[in-house]
Length: 212
Image (cartoon, rainbow, N blue to C red):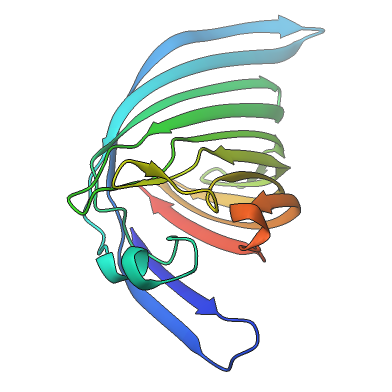
């Protein structure tokens, strides 16, 4: 993954930017449920996937951000640690209209600089509709909610009071499937947040992906 982040300090004109490779996630999935049936001559499909994986500390971690900054230690391209991932994805679809639910939990470990980010839970729910354009192209708009909660960080095994929190965000997006290629974009905006004791404010987030 490639990331570009910026930090703006209120009351000053100092704006800091970082960009580069982030942490790589490796995850494998097992298909626990995959059924098809009909309701009033309409096709009903359900699937449940369970995933287990690892996050590598491939992104750049700057120790000075944790040691000398009075801000929460979030202005990093990576965490500098190897962490573990648990994930579940459920999807139910009636013809072309569907609902997808997902949950993932990240178990963090201490990095080489004795900093450990708090474990993080993220759940999401989306409504979507698939539109076919010709034989090889499909467009799928989506809309939903994302809830995130993170425990407090630890530095040198001491809990950092100004870390952790929760947020609730809206999300809209779309994915285009052209033969075997999928291209997607999504936009997120918080409707509730209480992060790092109010010292961090989320604005909005735009993400894109390409898969084959």
